[in-house]
Amino acid sequence: MAMQRREFLRLAGLGGIFLVTGPGRSALAAGEQSQAEEFTFVQMSDSHWGFSGPAVNPEAAVTLKKAVDEVNGLAKRPDFIVFTGDLTHTTDDPQERRKRLGEFKEIISGLTVKDVKFIPGEHDASLDNGEAYKEFFGQTHYAFSHKGVHFIALDNVSDPTASIGDEQLQWFGAQLAKLDKNDRVVVLAHRPLFDLYPQWDWATRDGAKAVEMLTPFADVTVLYGHIHQENHFMTGSIPHHAAKSLIFPLPAPGSVPKRVPIAWDPAAPFKGLGVRGVGAAPAKKNLELTEYPL
Image (tube, rainbow, N blue to C red; front, side):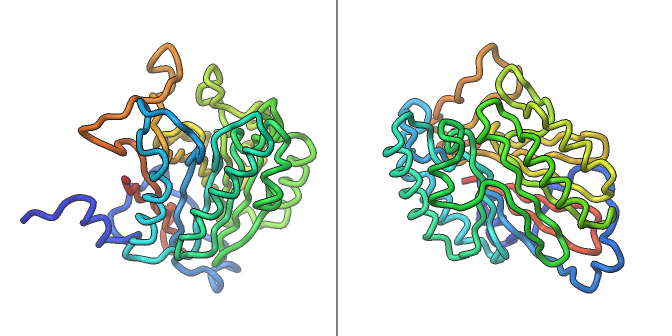
């Protein structure tokens, strides 16, 4: 019997077939080489826990749990997981918002990899400037390093104008000032930092300032969510990679007059949904992406 694609991907694990995008990137600085090791992590995004819409996803109550099972079943265990926003679906009720954040956190606790990092989406944070989100998940922007790679998580959603803001941009500049221009940098955000399609809120008002600050660095990758589909774009030498959603896909930018979720296809349930494996290796010049369908 021919091996099914999903089974093959599972057996291959994060070290298997990779989608490599973007031009060649510079290697880590010599001073980083002793610390750098090959590793993998998983990007999950846009679960919108609390969403209800049978025409869009009649399995909304189990899709996030299915994603947890998929990640737990990967053949190669990732070092950590990052969740790039819209953990929950928006609500005007502060009590309901906290209830959804708590339920999301409980479901995610089922991941066997316990090092899980989060940033908010506008559905989590824009109505209260991230107040409820911080109660459950801490700061909305932060930085960390892992095996010679420097990660910076930005918050471009808590400000309801879809801005990063001057204060956070100053913090961002201070983080970058600590690094060598040849260090490998990975930026995590919810909205795209470039103007993908502003008519659909697929942009960050001051994102160009952040991109300009990254331009002097030789090895930068931006991972984001928000648009509910895989998308790859270059700003100069910087690749930007959008992740699929865990609840419903959205149409390609500007492909239809109105941004509406793509209807559920009973013949192909969970089509367009998935998680992403990301591989980093000192000897290779690109982050390596593997797309895992649900």
